[in-house]
Each structure stands twice: as C-alpha cells, then as structure tokens.
Length: 117
Image (cartoon, rainbow, N blue to C red; front, side, top):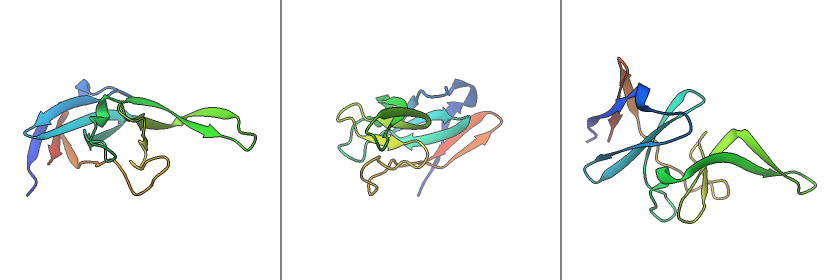
C-alpha cells in the first residue's frame, strides 16, 4: 500500500533542475517543466542509474537534410550513465518506447508537496 510522504515545499523546486529526496530505499526527484511539477523515481529503467542527476537538455532532431536542430520545447532528461534520453512530456525514451520513467502521484497542500510511494 502506498503512503503519503512529505517531499518539501513548492518554493524549493526549480525549473529544469531536479531536487532529490530519499524515502527509505526509494530515491525521488522533482522538477518544474513549464511551470508544471514533475515527480519521478530517481531510477533509470535502462540500467538503474540515478536518472535525476542527469541533465535536462533540448531534444535533438534531425531534419530531412540530416541537419541537427535543438528543440527546447521538447526537453529530454539524459541519463548520466549511458546517455539514454527520456521525454519530460511522457517519460518515454526517445528511441525505445517500452521503457519509461516512473512518474509518481503527488499532492500539493498549501505549498507543501506530498508524494505517494
């Protein structure tokens, strides 16, 4: 059964950078993406890396002429171990849709964040 845990205050969370908290044997990261709170397990589904210590970067897109462009509107979280990239929009990997980040439910109560683990 999941339990409600105090994570911190909304004021502590930064856009584009993860704040990490430990709850027993679970590590959880929270960030803001376009002002929306995102809370995930700090665990890469590919190889178990602490995914929230990776970088949030613009998605790389190759056009028809094989030119590389960066799309800041579609940021990805790059794993610090093997460079796998996960969409912040839906948690899916850029290349393998079966693997995705584990998003957690949360509640905000008078500026305090509570995660359900």
